[in-house]
Amino acid sequence: MTMQPVPSIGKDTELTVRMWLTMFLLAVVFVGFLGILFVLGLNWIFILVIAVLMAGFQYFMSDKLVLWTTRAKVVTAEQEPKFHATVEKLAERAGIPKPKKLAIMETHVPNAFATGRNPKNAVVAVTRGLLDRLDESEVEAVLGHELAHVKNRDVAVMTWASLVVIMAGYLMQMLFWMSLFGGFGGRSRRSGNGGQAAIFIMLAMAVTIVVYFISQILIMALSRYREYAADRGGAILTGTPLKLASALAKISDQVYRIPEKDLRQVEHANAFFIIPALKGNSIASLFSSHPPVEKRIAKLEAMQQEIQQNRLRPRQFRIN
Amino acid sequence: MGFFGNLLGRSNKPRKGRFLKAVDALESLKIKSDFRTTGKIGIVFNPSDEMFFKNLGRELMRILHDHPATSGVRFELIDDAYTSRWIALEDRDFVRLANAALLVGNTFIEREFRKRLLAIAVPIEYERQKAYWIYSYKRDKFHPFIPTGEKSRDGKAEMKLGDVMKGEGVSVEGTLELWYPLWGIPF
Image (cartoon, rainbow over all chains, first blue to last red; front, side, top):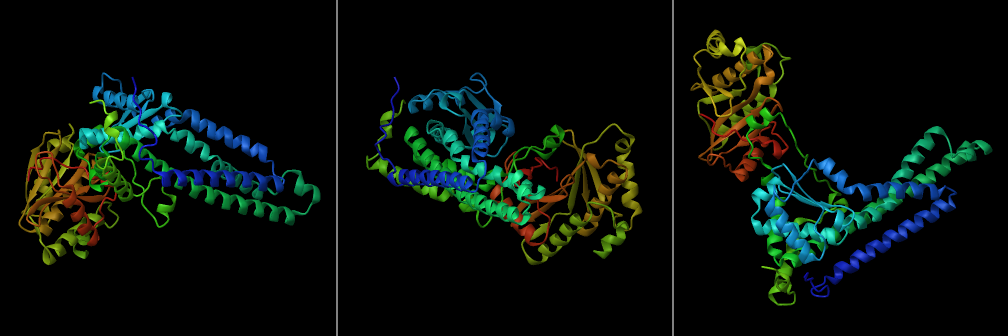
């Protein structure tokens, strides 16, 4: 028997509205972009097909691509019984099948991710540092967050939401090469007015760049909303928003980036495996795919309040 | 800097500038804040079967003695639990000590054993706490290390110390993930 949280309880209406509004705006940009391409006489179907193929590749290969790029190793239930048992329990509670693959990255920096095109093909990965440095209930809270991503099908949502960005990105490249090699197929050569063709390319380029940046900003906003939603969904799943809050505080704490493995060991193993830290810049928050940790923690603390005032009753879905 | 430059004579020798800059920084920190050096500096390396390592004791005796800037510096060879070996240098004069560490390191480099050099550990006392400045040969950068137990360290205090070092112009390793500890430093 699976028990599922009643969706109407404690729903964050504002978040839902923002999310749908962002997706609507993305759709508007997408359609508008196609319209402009059509008016400019560009082969918009060709560009759309290319973009769909690229997005489709990301969509279907997400699990393999991410495992490959992060060097996360898939672990069996025999190797990591606790990890498997917790995910299984949470997946059942969330009403989704247990993710196909669970993986561990051998780094001391605490972190986790989920990917895969649907719940059945999902991959949930954690770092060794997460298992070592967070306590059991914090690990569970993090896994709850990741399973909420899986349940919300965020890979699908984000991949297809990125379609317009992929299109614009591809077109930018195409226009760049065109401008180098002089013109759009027959158009410029036929009329022999190179100046007009150059203006045409510049116009198309300008539109594409504007579309690229607007859609990028919208996608980053959408991504942040999906993070809030996963925080919320995960906290409802485990019933412990404060544990997710403390886990987030630990994950974002710079001090956990400092290793415990000895220099001599590292040099002997000859493995200098590092994940370079991204340095923040002035427009980082606008383009950031994750909301600031302080805001997430504040929201989770507010959720705890709701639970205490019985407006949220996740406890009833707990198994233990 | 001129003094150190003359000592080694070869301006194009790598891995000199940053270490000496850190020595200068420590000297100035000793004057203006709660810093103390301890009269010891160690170099840790991975030994091999080659003659150079078999005769290292005698060799060190000779090179340290031959140089006026380092004569009188005592040393000890210590094997550790990681199959690495330490050259623990000792002298009351910190600058003499730093010269000796650099000279020993450069001897390794001259004999093409640069890859065997791991780090230089400079023990200090910082706010009444035992701390180290670790110089990584591979990265040519420093990072702080404050052990609090057999295999535990005070990361918060290290980050603070790292800021102090940066403030003095020391090349501090920017990637925190590379602030590797050296557990059980024998001095």
